[in-house]
Amino acid sequence: MVKNDPFANATKQVNDACDIIGIKDKELREYLAMPNKMMRVKIPVKMDNGKIRVFTGFRSQHNNDRGPYKGGIRYFNPEGGVEYMEREVMALSSWMTWKCAIVDIPLGGGKGGIYVNPKTEKLSDGEMERLTRQFAYKISEIIGPEKDIPAPDVYTTGREMTQIMDTFSKLNGNKYSPGVITGKPISMGGSLARNVATGLGTAYCVREAAKALKINLKTSKVVLQGFGNASTFAGIYLEKMGAKVIGASDSKGSILFEKGAKVSKLMEYKEKTGSVVGFPGSKKVSTEELLTAKCDILVPGALENQITAKIANNLKCKIIGEAANGPTLPEADPIIAKKKILVIPDILANSGGVCISYLEWVQNNMGYYWSFDEVANKMEKNITKGFKDAYELSKKHKIDMRKATMVLAVERVLEAFNQKGIWP
Ligand code: NAD
Image 1 (tube, rainbow, N blue to C red):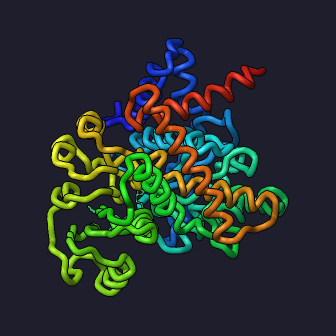
Image 2: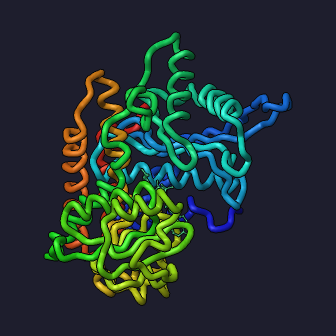
Image 3: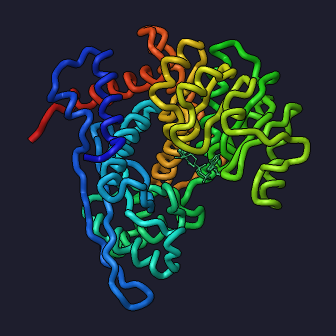
């Protein structure tokens, strides 16, 4: 048994949605919850010291009723070990299925990874490349532009994506196959706007939520937890929409600056000093003080499990845009709902990333590339429609947005499943 099993959480979410939709059939519930396929591979690598080391890798293919599997590959070593990682990858692949369905892109859910921490284990570039190419070889039979399209995730970058694409292309008789993977560097067929996609998508969702609640973004105050890719770009785009950032944090601590500061100035400061902490005119505060500061919009954009029941009780924001995956504990949801704070759940708020990954794949498949604005505008359409569909459903069923997004997603996957039926 795995402790704090993430796949049990993912399964519970599917069952909760089935309860609301009225799906009683246990077998159908199992079909929706379980991955279609889970591949576990052994990856032998010749290390720089001449010895062989065997790594363990996974690829979980959750559901492809709406299109090829899609989802990242992470190189990580969660505390629970290899068995925990297997369950985590299964859960993450399930969330990818729902994420793609909410924003209505024709893809399913997948996720993969290798149990390794390249940072703490200090793997050399050569070891990383041999590990990546051997993993690509092991999963090559189940991935492909029409089958399963991986992407970067924790501790993997455009470099690993290029190596996977190159390995796959060479294994297939040198068939140029950029569409086998997304998150590639621009020179390798990557898409413009992919680097800002997640934060930009969060900002679009927050804008729609503000409209729904009749909150004026131009007089709104924003607190960002984390100052990495997702949260920084959420801050930049919310600022462009007229809001003011009054708090931020990173692994070194949290700060509040009541008068507000330009995100670009914070970025410059972090670039110079390695942290946002110490930013001129700011006050250092605890994580709890940051999250419960008086603001209109809170963007938890760093870590899981940040908003506990205790923090939820003290929240003073009106909108939460979950740029991070899983920042809110289930115990906090009913408290937040009671306080009438509108939560844009992670599977919607951070889906800008997978939307633009989809657009990268489309561009690869047609061999024609769009401008930054063309890509961003297409993502905006999908994500704002996803928000509106979920918001309407939340009103119709009188449920919170987290449940509404899951209901919407499960209904869409089920519709595709019913259209196709079972064959052979
Ligand atoms: P990142 O590595 O660029 O940034 C993470 C940030 O969190 C850093 O600023 C780091 O300093 C900060 N941080 C770490 N520990 C902290 C702590 N204890 N308190 C406060 N801040 C802390 O990562 P990212 O890509 O921005 O991802 C952040 C979250 O967004 C993750 O949950 C990730 O799964 C999710 N997400 C990211 C993308 C994407 O495209 N980048 C897509 C979907 C979801």
